[in-house]
Length: 258
View 1 (spheres, one colour):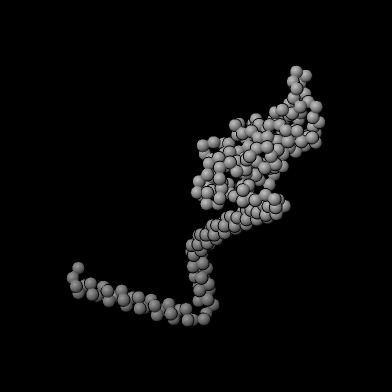
View 2 (tube, one colour; view 1 turned 90 degrees about the vertical axis):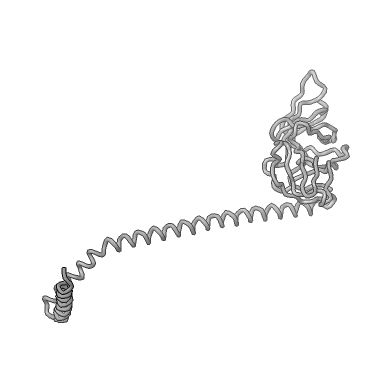
């Protein structure tokens, strides 16, 4: 197509568009009922054509809002959980403070359980050590009773042998007569007493305490309570089963007796 033909074609198109523009302008500036009806039809058509787009945008907005709300709800739940844990920790710390104040005769150093010892289920690691004046063979208790003793001490942490260790044994006193016996663990929270004479009167629920005979443990630390006792005709001693008082499976905070 020659340049001249192209020019005339473009000129005609421009003329057509100008003509259409002014025709539409004149048409829609006319206030006749027919024109108004056409305008309404065009508005309805535009609204109908735009509806799917608006519907899709609304769906995306609602989904985005739901995602944001879900995120906010999750964050609030985590915050609430954290605040609840802080409250529980605060209650425990207050109980520890009260416990320390009610035992002024004992020098108690508070400590946190860092973690269970991965090499043994019968020991734990606590966050105090040589820098806190901790030595080997110092008793460790919680607010319920004897937990164990330190067996290895680092600069800032110590390993504690638990009372549930099969190799653990301690001299205790039991009964109204405060007769001496030996406590040894069996399984879980339970243990037994060796050397309790048949003549000794016992009661279920009775608390047994450290005797003070040992150089490690001071006297009158609660150790366990009597669960059951039986007498064998062929033995001079009773079979006494006891339950450990310390909450071994719930340890978070302990005291080291200095």
